[in-house]
Length: 424
Image (cartoon, rainbow, N blue to C red; front, side):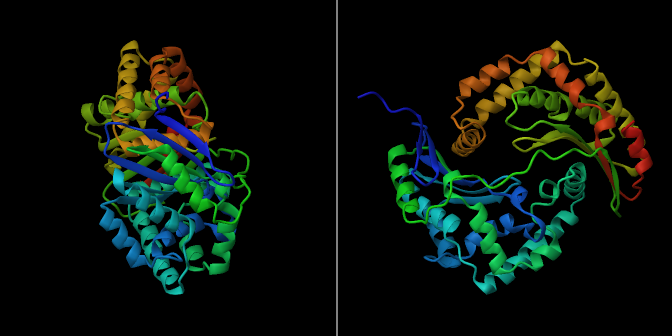
């Protein structure tokens, strides 16, 4: 009998794809249910419903009250988590290998069979309103969220994942159930696991759960066309000690092959301690404690974001430094030394992440959702090794155009005239 493949995929009839990666040296397993329904699939009064359902999953099911869910998870020693993004809702757990079956039972129960007890709805509304308030009180979170919202002409893409406070307060059970029925489609889901996992056993467990559910069409929730980007600027006056400054440049999404060059570009620009912005802004001038660049991307669109927090009196100096670095990189200023460095950095991150069952599980699920297949680590490593100066230089020339940026400032002296200079 030939040895079992480490990576396997089974499509459950009328149900999800089950994708697994066996890691023989591990004694634990990470398991996740991925539902392609997020804030992007909300409209109008629905804004925040995907996130609300994620919260309500832990507030009781048909089989388990909320306290029993907590007790059973603790008894397993499991590390359970959940999150909502613009395109997905995800429920995950990491457990010892011999706890995988009960972990699946709990995870499937909370993800697929939640209840909406009226008293829990009221309590969770208050919790989420506090979460919204935390973002309002955190300057960098508030600025970057506002920057994203300002960047797109599509409200479904741009609105906050948590939803607006007034809308959340008005949620009613009928509307919540209707949104869930339209967006939680079993045939579009993915169950992913990595670590000490037996593929056939997990596929049988998944099939057992989904065979008892009513059939739901396999199509994913409707996603509109790629939103149009809106360059411009915004100023958020706020009585804080520092001025927070951010810029966003439109980029293609995660399914685009240029993602490797964009990751390299973002890293060289401000992704680590040896990056240009970190060295120029913090190390050489002491302008800021925190300065960075990151990719904030969906499957088909996103932003390359730059953020820094500085003394309000030095905002213009910061913008001059950032402009100079953008111009240098856009005009072909990436060096061979930087290319060699970023290749090794990205390869190192890839292999460091591969030692985590959770990271491997996430990678399995995301690649299946994006590409419909397993992408071997060796394939990704080879693609990183092939990165060239021409690729990164072209990405810089295409992306780092301040005239096509959305820029924002939050602070005691929020002047859009400063930002107009940044976007000239």
